[in-house]
Image (cartoon, rainbow, N blue to C red; front, side, top):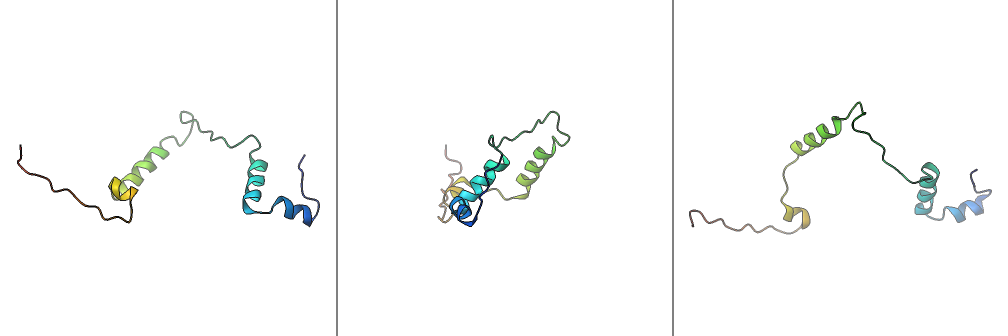
Amino acid sequence: MEDYPQNLKEFDVRFRSEEACREYLLQLRWPDGFRFRFNRRRSKSRGKLFFRLVQQALAIEPVPLDRMLHPGAKVKLKPQSVGAG
């Protein structure tokens, strides 16, 4: 049985912020918590996820780790020595 607000004052108290409203809706939708249920062996679209990940990986330019960690910093490349050895 749901415990709905009975008047505007109760509504304002219960949903005083977006976070309180979000928590209420999450609890209403998933009372036992959210669980991702996906059985890749029985799924009719089991190869689609892998296919889409490969598709995305091929569609974007590779990004150096330094640029991902420090997007605004200028990356200094170290000169490579040729024939030293």
